[in-house]
Image (tube, one colour):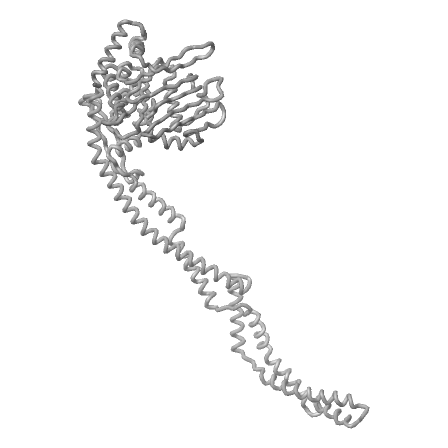
Length: 536
């Protein structure tokens, strides 16, 4: 409950400290006296947008403070709005954010501004009102919708058309198979080049060996001549060293002849092997043309292709899993939507009857109120909820935008609030009685008083900004906003009317514009007495 509100330098309010009690409090005063500034101050404490132009001219900043109490817990909320720069928020003396203030005050206070009637025309508020009345649990539906949305996004991230992925996988498999079947190994191209050169000249290699053998072994050839030289120098002392060297050369030539003969005999032309080498080398050239500059790059390409194929196959498998999960999630979504729709359809008739009964108490006895629910898969909540009203007997129901005047719309909103008893302990109505008068105004005042009494055994709190004396008469407390000119400026003072004579005088002003009129004063007393009688 709101215990006290302090406002400084906000609009026409230079300084105000307003105490609040339980029940219905009426804030009255002349037009332009600053009543709406009080509602704006409460909106600021609720995390609303701070407008620097609302700072009182000549002041550096506006300050709003509110003391709220719930059970044994107290909260002091403070909002500072500089004439230039960003606003600051405080909770129990510590800096906080406007969003945190909004979260807290959503449990403490509900503000119905002058445009709340227009909000009532929106599909969202109508749907939320029905859900609140029916006790519809939207969490399963929202969770199912979030899951479907997430799976759709994940499926989108995996991307591509199924045919494109299949073609890409087939291409990768072909490339991997082509390289794998070649069974390449590093350095193979150099080995094949060397062996190819050898086999390509095999005949010439063999002929060269045989020719060398002939030059060494034939009669009168190299080996024979060296043997003759050794014999010629044998036993000749002057040639002893040369004889030893020629003897060693003779032995080396003998070894060379043996090795030369073995090598020449081993050289065998192999056209089949040579042809295979040529084909193998061409295969390597073809693979390098497709996949890399050398065997190392070709093998690296194969490794990367295998990794890409694994990812692609994994993605395909994951897509299959997601598709199955998505199908199950959509089934769950439909089931959740059906449960929500069923709950709404089941409660729509009861809400219509309940609101219609309250409208009867608000001087709209001939009104008929219906709640229409249409299921739709295209809507995020699964249903289209429409409030329909016939304000007079014999007139077909129509949407609120077409069927209700401003005053009737105000009473529909109040009736709905009365039906939806679950709410925060403090409710604020800014001119909810706009467009209402006479007997209807009395009904609105009585309804606001009932709302301010809360549930049995608990104290509610309602603040209403009103121009109607019939409504103000039902208030448990009354606060007067009065402006006066001081020099070149206008200042608003806000006073709690604790004395009954003060209330009577203000009600008389509201009735006739003349607070000292005896007739108006008498009428004001009658209004107060009648209101007290009706609320017991």
